[in-house]
Length: 212
Image 1: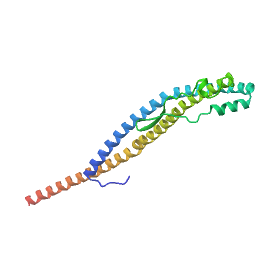
Image 2: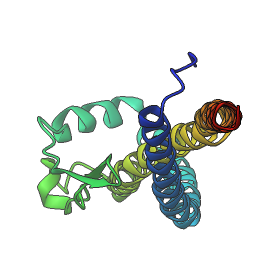
Image 3: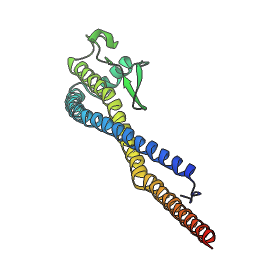
Image 4: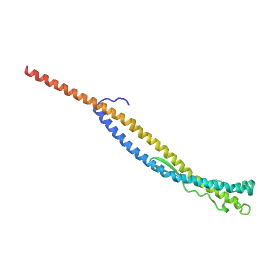
């Protein structure tokens, strides 16, 4: 920080800047605490969703392996072509928390009834249908998990950014402002002492002249 001119006006300005910086630190710490509380609150639901996804994928893989072995890859491939989705509409919602944008995906229901998958129950085994149902369930969980991971990452980044700002204010900006304040105060006090000393000398000279 550049040295400022040692004037009373600059002293007042520096004191005001220190006050504003200290208020900023308090606000940033409040923000960081709120973000960190939200971060901690999200960890367990996220881990539970990940465990749920693992279970769903394991079950879906087992069922698919059974269908492949019994029904054959050709039957599975032809069934997949029939039941393929042409589009997937997702409802995205955005919200803000302490200025951080959070993305939510509204509850998506991908699991369909047997008749809604586009194939005939007479030509498709229950094994293939059950495999389709299990993978639809896994994709549902994945779509719920993805925004949770994004929110957690954004919160972590914002917590780091806020912490850096707090550290910059506490360890650099405020100490430099206080150092400047101390410098100006010392210069002003030295000037005041010099002025008093000169005034005493002038008074002393005036008194000596009056006696002579």
